Length: 172
Image (cartoon, rainbow, N blue to C red; front, side):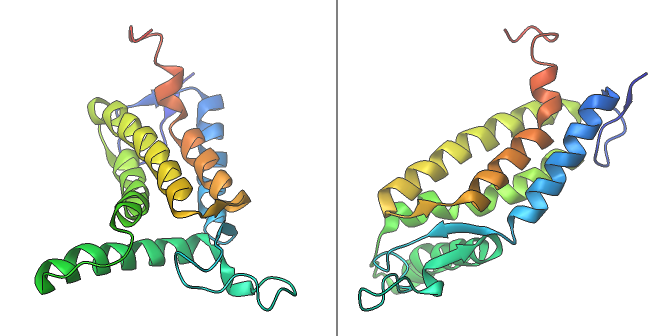
């Protein structure tokens, strides 16, 4: 017997196993915002890093919710503020690549509320943006920590109905 998929859309039916997987994915997704997600050396975000060669600064590690805040600030500083002032400074490419990771969180909300027609499209876009975020992390010199990987795992488990239905809809 199939149950209704997680979210507001009552048209998408999934098996009880997929429903449980989605609930686990949602829990991982939410918990990941409280865990250390990114470490930086002080050159990109200016948070610190090694202090006097004797250990690391606690401010060099960002939790998931702090990453969201930093990405919003990147977008504001490098695109909105510089557009009005006509002056742009800093790592614009990295800011764009990392700034769109906030968009992933918004797309997850849209995915949960979307119709079956849009879920597949949103899932593909989220997958592409995750890859793009990894490119931004590599270019900026930031190191992804276990909170980031838990965030990605939660997203993938939340979108598991799209993967499980892929073959039955002729996408293979």
